Image (cartoon, rainbow, N blue to C red):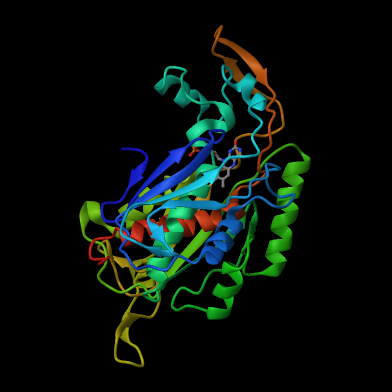
Length: 360
Ligand SMILES: Cc1cc2nc3c(=O)[nH]c(=O)nc-3n(C[C@H](O)[C@H](O)[C@H](O)COP(=O)(O)O)c2cc1C
C-alpha cells in the first residue's frame, strides 16, 4: 500500500495538489486526547508558504476536523482531517502533461498510470500533500508530547551553508523552543542570514537549491523498536523517504562512520548523576541494534533542489518522442527545506507511535 503507514496508528493520505481537498484519515487514536486547534494551526503554519523564499501559492492550510473529535477531544473513531485546496492554477501545468519535468514524478507517474495521472500541480506527488502529513503527524506529536517526548528539527544545511548541530546528548530547552516557534528554524542567526541569501541567489537565477534537516527526538525511552526489519532506523527511514524530495538519511554520525576508527566512533557507556546507564557521546544517534538506547535519537535527511525551476531545461515530448526544451510555468519553492522541517517532525512522530514496544 502506498498511501497508508503504520499498524497501530494508521495514517492514510488522500487528495492531490489541485483536487478539491487533501487530507489524512488517522485510525487507532485512543479516545480522550485533547486536540488543541490553536496548537494545530500554529504547527501547520510552520510548513505554510509565506515569504519570498517559498512558492507564491497561498493556502490557508486550515485543518477541518470532519470526524473523530467531539468537543475538542478524540472519541475513538477514526479522525478525518481535511484541508481544502483553494489557490490552484491548473492551466500552468498543461505543457508538462506530455513533456515531463526533469527530476519530478511526471515521467514515472505517466508510465505507471498510463497517462491517467493527475498532472495538475504534480497530483498526489506534490509537496502539497505534506500538509496532510503535518495534520496527521500533529496528532502523533501530541501523543508523544503527553509522555514528555519532544521532536525538534532545524535546517542544518542549504547549499554550501551549514548550521551548528543540535545538542546530541540532552535537550537544550532554549534552542528547542526557538526552533519550534520558527518557520525557518536555524540555530545560528548568522547561518540563517547566509542561507536566506543562498536561496534568494538561486531564485534570482531561476534556479533552486537543496539542503539538509537535522532532527532530534529527546526523552525517548530506551527499548523501543526491534531487530532486523522492525528496526527504528527502518521505520523512520520509511516514513522520512515518503516525504517528496528526500533522497538521503543518516542516523548519528551516519556516513562519517566510513572514515572513523572504532576507538573514536564507539559511544562509551558511563553512569550519569542518577546512576543511569548513558553514553559519553552519541555517534550512534540513540539507536543500538534497531532499538532506542535512551540517548537522543538523531538523524539527518537530505533534500534535492526543487525540480521545477524557471530556467529552460532539456526534456522529451512523449507525444512524438522528440527531444525538446521545457519552460516550466507555475509557482514553485526555490528551496523547500525550511518548510519541510515541520514535515520531518510530523512523519517522525507517525513512525515512533508505530514503533515496536510503544504502547498506545
Ligand atoms: C514542502 C515541499 C514543497 C515542495 N514544493 C515543490 C515545488 O514547488 N515544485 C516542485 O517541483 N517540487 C516541489 N517539491 C518536491 C516534489 O514534490 C518532489 O521532488 C517530486 O514529487 C518528486 O518526488 P521525489 O523528489 O521524491 O522523487 C516539494 C516538496 C516538499 C517536501
